[in-house]
Each structure stands twice: as C-alpha cells, then as structure tokens.
Length: 140
Image (cartoon, rainbow, N blue to C red):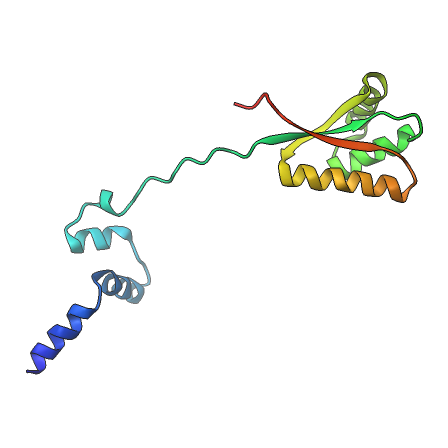
C-alpha cells in the first residue's frame, strides 16, 4: 500500500522538476540531462533563438540659426554627442554652411532624448538652437 502511495505521489511530480532538483543538487543543470532522461533528442529542448532585427536608427540633426554662437554648438556636440573638438568644429561648420548637420545615429528613444537635451540646454542658455530627428533610410 505504501508503495502504491509513493508511486501515485511520484506520478504527480513532472519529470522536469525531478531533473531540475537533481541538477540543483549537483550544482549544475545541463539541458542534455533532461534530453537523456526523457529519451528525447536535444533538438526537442534547444530551440533556435529567433532572429531579431536591429532597431531602426534616427539621425539627430542640428539646424542653423543666426543667433546661436558657434562655440555653444561645438560645446553641445562635445558634451552630448561625445565628439572630439575637431569633429565638433567640422560638424558645426557643416551646420553653418549647409544649414543642417548630423550629430549622430541612434535608436529612436536615445535620439529623442538627445534632441530634448539639446533643446533644453539651448533654452536654458537663451539660444534658439533647433534639433530634429530623421529616420535613417540607408539601413540594410
């Protein structure tokens, strides 16, 4: 009778729980343990990870205006976009000559945050500097 009760109790516990408990006692759990114990091949347990496409990138761009000092723009590029002084000057001159310059490419959330930071700092310093986002169409 006791043996019947033990068999009934054992039937209630899923095999995976037993294998996990055994693995925990050993200090290691390997997926192959379950495959070996159940007679199932490892292909039944290990699924391929789904391929996830990288997030779309957005260009963070500064627009030229007649009031924001060039030194301020260089400072913004260095502080918020981690540009060297020479890179920042080059981008600033592009903004000055062409009317727009790309500061960097980022996923949308980061790009949006960077743009908000630029505008916030510019407004605190009473500059009309504008920052816009544009989806990068050159991605593969």
